[in-house]
Image (cartoon, rainbow, N blue to C red; front, side, top):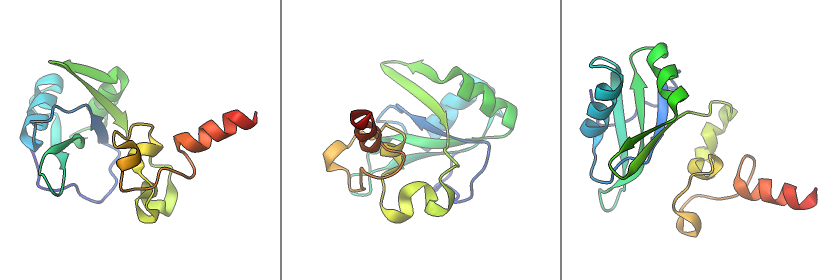
Length: 141
């Protein structure tokens, strides 16, 4: 079942999905996951849309009905749909009260080493857990 927005609650059954085809909305993501994992596998799905253009940003979230299905999805990691490689990852819940970087303006996707916006991103690409910090640490060592 698709929903209009992502619930703000963390749920251990929720996963981050990237590589979503640009024409997909919530319903198409939910249908793909249901075909892949079983008719009643998905509780809710959400595809992130650009606020200005309304075009999907290529990522979203899926909450599975049970932990077992979520684990199976994460273990396989990626699925092919046409030219797209749809990747499923666990959501990093170890960011504490920083809200996974959002509250301080740090790009969540950058922290996951997946931000497609690079220098055009409206969030910061610096700080703990990101690529720049890792590259700087590599240069020191």
